[in-house]
Length: 143
Image (cartoon, rainbow, N blue to C red; front, top):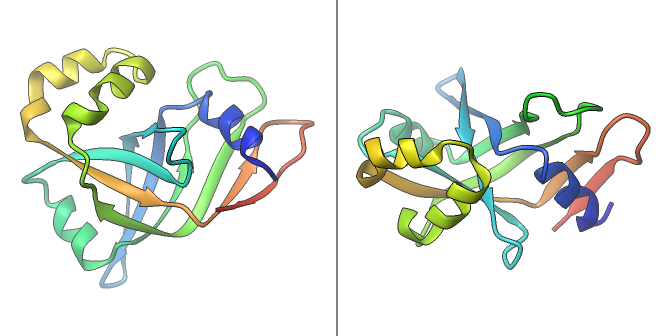
């Protein structure tokens, strides 16, 4: 699998179901994501800086995710990965805001309401299973 399939699926989504686990207790959250082509092995998402989720991220940064296709996307394209390392990013929401505004519908409303409370996290990708949709070749992309 090459980066073209990854880009194709990424174009159909702006969110993932992020799976975490601490003390044998699993949890899943839907989070908006952005991606920068110059750093292809990294997805970014934000969280409110006083959210209980931050303690979970710090305790066990080994996570899994699956993309959630945008409404009306044909063929059920998706990407999923396990053992992804989650870490606080050196980038800020100011750095990523243009990407959020371009890729997440109505993100300006989110920014206006809680933008100052958001912190950025990175998901460092190693192996990502990519399925561009029904009838298309699927496989694992290695970074």
